[in-house]
Image (cartoon, rainbow, N blue to C red; front, side, top):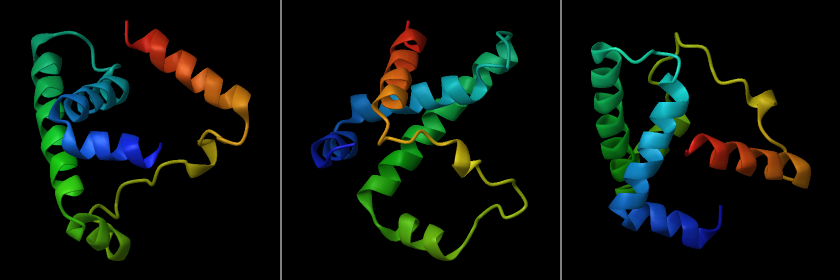
Length: 103
Protein backbone atom coordinates (compact mmCIF):
# COMPACT_ATOMS: atom_id res chain seq x y z
CA UNK A 1 0.00 0.00 0.00
CA UNK A 2 1.36 3.37 -0.94
CA UNK A 3 1.19 6.41 1.36
CA UNK A 4 -1.36 7.95 -1.03
CA UNK A 5 -3.56 4.86 -0.77
CA UNK A 6 -3.36 4.94 3.02
CA UNK A 7 -4.29 8.63 2.94
CA UNK A 8 -7.26 7.74 0.73
CA UNK A 9 -8.42 5.15 3.28
CA UNK A 10 -8.02 7.66 6.09
CA UNK A 11 -9.85 10.50 4.36
CA UNK A 12 -12.39 8.81 2.09
CA UNK A 13 -15.38 7.41 3.99
CA UNK A 14 -16.68 5.66 0.87
CA UNK A 15 -13.44 3.76 0.25
CA UNK A 16 -13.04 2.90 3.94
CA UNK A 17 -16.64 1.68 4.07
CA UNK A 18 -16.07 -0.49 1.02
CA UNK A 19 -12.95 -1.91 2.69
CA UNK A 20 -15.03 -2.69 5.78
CA UNK A 21 -17.63 -4.47 3.65
CA UNK A 22 -14.94 -6.42 1.81
CA UNK A 23 -13.29 -7.47 5.08
CA UNK A 24 -16.58 -8.60 6.54
CA UNK A 25 -17.54 -10.52 3.41
CA UNK A 26 -14.21 -12.31 3.34
CA UNK A 27 -14.29 -13.00 7.08
CA UNK A 28 -17.92 -14.05 7.36
CA UNK A 29 -18.70 -15.49 3.95
CA UNK A 30 -19.22 -18.94 5.43
CA UNK A 31 -21.97 -17.64 7.72
CA UNK A 32 -24.77 -18.44 5.26
CA UNK A 33 -27.51 -16.25 3.87
CA UNK A 34 -30.31 -16.35 6.41
CA UNK A 35 -31.68 -13.22 8.07
CA UNK A 36 -29.49 -13.61 11.15
CA UNK A 37 -26.32 -13.82 9.05
CA UNK A 38 -27.40 -10.76 7.05
CA UNK A 39 -27.95 -8.78 10.25
CA UNK A 40 -24.60 -9.93 11.64
CA UNK A 41 -22.87 -8.95 8.40
CA UNK A 42 -24.52 -5.53 8.35
CA UNK A 43 -23.57 -4.86 11.97
CA UNK A 44 -19.99 -6.03 11.37
CA UNK A 45 -19.62 -3.67 8.39
CA UNK A 46 -20.74 -0.73 10.51
CA UNK A 47 -18.51 -1.64 13.45
CA UNK A 48 -15.45 -2.21 11.27
CA UNK A 49 -16.02 1.06 9.41
CA UNK A 50 -16.27 3.02 12.67
CA UNK A 51 -13.22 1.23 14.06
CA UNK A 52 -11.16 1.94 10.93
CA UNK A 53 -12.23 5.58 11.12
CA UNK A 54 -11.14 5.77 14.78
CA UNK A 55 -7.85 4.03 14.06
CA UNK A 56 -7.05 6.42 11.22
CA UNK A 57 -8.13 9.49 13.20
CA UNK A 58 -5.84 8.85 16.16
CA UNK A 59 -2.64 6.97 16.86
CA UNK A 60 -3.86 5.98 20.33
CA UNK A 61 -5.45 2.69 19.25
CA UNK A 62 -2.38 1.54 17.33
CA UNK A 63 -0.12 2.60 20.20
CA UNK A 64 -2.30 0.68 22.67
CA UNK A 65 -2.28 -2.42 20.44
CA UNK A 66 1.51 -2.36 20.46
CA UNK A 67 1.43 -2.69 24.25
CA UNK A 68 -1.67 -4.80 24.92
CA UNK A 69 -3.58 -7.63 23.25
CA UNK A 70 -7.29 -6.88 23.83
CA UNK A 71 -8.26 -10.54 23.28
CA UNK A 72 -5.28 -12.64 24.36
CA UNK A 73 -7.45 -15.76 24.57
CA UNK A 74 -8.06 -15.66 20.79
CA UNK A 75 -5.67 -17.41 18.45
CA UNK A 76 -3.37 -15.02 16.60
CA UNK A 77 -3.49 -14.91 12.80
CA UNK A 78 -1.23 -17.33 10.97
CA UNK A 79 1.38 -14.78 9.96
CA UNK A 80 3.32 -17.41 8.08
CA UNK A 81 0.51 -17.67 5.53
CA UNK A 82 0.89 -14.04 4.47
CA UNK A 83 1.52 -13.26 0.85
CA UNK A 84 5.18 -12.57 0.16
CA UNK A 85 4.91 -9.28 -1.72
CA UNK A 86 8.41 -9.81 -3.06
CA UNK A 87 7.00 -12.53 -5.27
CA UNK A 88 5.06 -10.92 -8.09
CA UNK A 89 3.16 -14.10 -8.87
CA UNK A 90 1.69 -14.15 -5.35
CA UNK A 91 0.75 -10.48 -5.54
CA UNK A 92 -0.82 -10.99 -8.95
CA UNK A 93 -2.76 -13.98 -7.59
CA UNK A 94 -4.00 -11.95 -4.61
CA UNK A 95 -5.19 -9.17 -6.91
CA UNK A 96 -6.86 -11.69 -9.21
CA UNK A 97 -8.61 -13.30 -6.24
CA UNK A 98 -9.77 -9.89 -4.96
CA UNK A 99 -11.17 -8.93 -8.36
CA UNK A 100 -12.90 -12.29 -8.72
CA UNK A 101 -14.46 -11.92 -5.27
CA UNK A 102 -15.81 -8.40 -5.81
CA UNK A 103 -18.33 -9.63 -8.37
